[in-house]
Image (cartoon, rainbow, N blue to C red; front, side):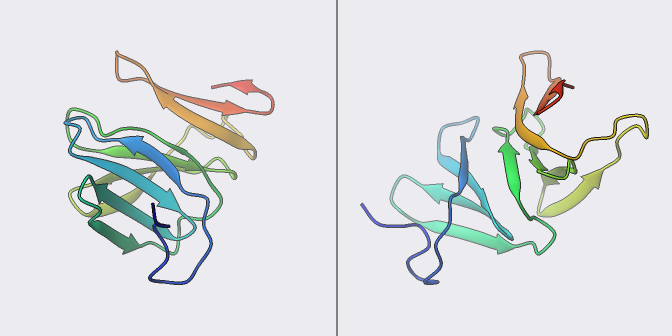
Length: 116
């Protein structure tokens, strides 16, 4: 077993989620999003905007993964593009701690104040 970050010499506590087809694991950590294949091959991309990551979903049918951070920002990554998803202004989230999707494709964000 080896650390995913040993080449960079950084300590991380990555979030992990399996890919829909089971060929790799998605990982997200401070400023990085990556894929880890079963043979140990690691591909990462730098994304400075990804900070304090608290949630990562497996990829959906369209191949997109969803991420959230402690500040309540929601991100969508698909086809090499990372975009912040707009949230309704009435949803004031500043302490998101988890993110899951359900079989109907809905996203659920856990916060210290409840579930959104």
